[in-house]
Image (cartoon, rainbow, N blue to C red):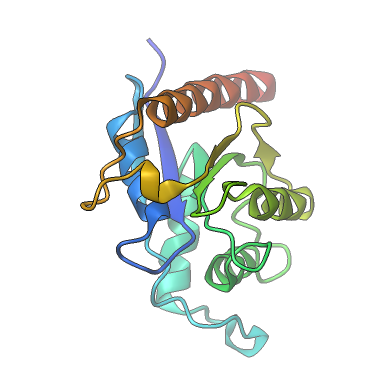
Length: 188
């Protein structure tokens, strides 16, 4: 039997009642056997400032350690102004710094996101993928999970009620596990 995989789930919203946090909770409930999802809260990470890199703030040190300890990353991002939220970009920047100490390097990664609109975070996800090139991350290309019209898919308590969306999230997690194992095998 393979060693269990740890996925680090990162919600790109600080809003406690956000649909993206709810989608991350749903992913934790839908994980296939042999996987666990740990989460990291981005609140408390200061705005990036190169003057503060050495030594890095304690929250950034813990964030980078969590990234390095994970087998893969799952970003769950809202879409703000056709792109990713500033808080998520800020966290990504901190974890890639200082130059030469990129915690994201070589990490398999998947993305999903929820929005009130009909495109379901498509533009934000594509912008996030662009950062993976420089960060040397290995994105899972399919399946894509773009949860549109989120208010119709979650109840008032933030529970995912849409079975089709639940199935898509589960497929994403299954594909991410296969992707991680393929990359691990290729490295040995």
